[in-house]
Length: 188
Image (cartoon, rainbow, N blue to C red; front, side, top):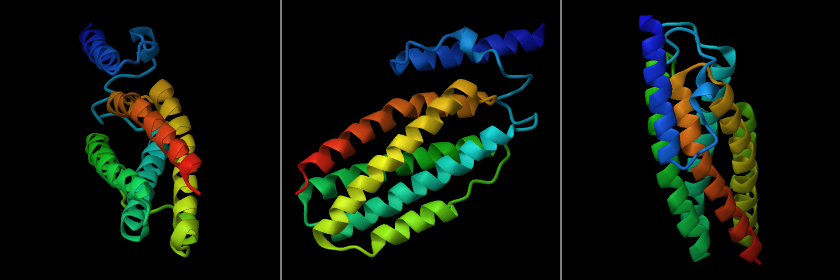
């Protein structure tokens, strides 16, 4: 009985959070897949949750590194402003995700995955207008991939904190994608 009451409190809290963020499609029925203590870190974390955490952490780091590089190298004011906003947003995302990792009793890595390192290495070699175009295209692709994994985690995660993180930040990532696409379309 106590477990059910705790579950209902967590479900209600996430539902309210989703409503506050304008995510009306989420209902408490969607949250019923977790087993006891899912948000507390007291049960084993699913492999999918661990994979999401690692991928999201690496993606945040790549977006920060690429944006810092764009702030230094770009002559285009719109690119620099976009990059500045992305550094701020993804630093915030990283800090939030680090807190979730601590709750899950997992190590939060600031290292890039091999795939993300390869993508960074490709962009870092470029200069001028070619760099700006490659930066914006890379960010657009990253956001498309991020949105997909965040939506999946928001629907399927067995950890309440991780699910809430994904649900909260998916709309923000969708906004980042729109900005990157608009910026790509105005670059020469």
